[in-house]
Image (cartoon, rainbow, N blue to C red; front, side):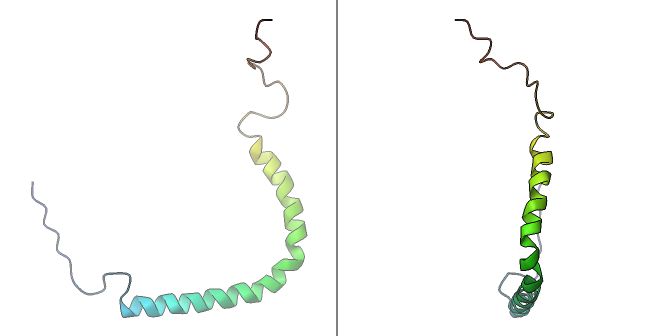
Length: 80
């Protein structure tokens, strides 16, 4: 089985002039979006951290089905 791939020379690569201009524009847009919205985000950060605590608690206990009764702990079954 022979596969022939035809590549056109236009538009390819990460460093074409059009893509460099696009990256430059996206970088400037990201900079201004971050700097403008950071002023609105900083006063809310303590509340976001407090909200993160119960969310982490819910998602971290997903793996062992909640509190208590972890059953099957081999440390308690070791002979003396």
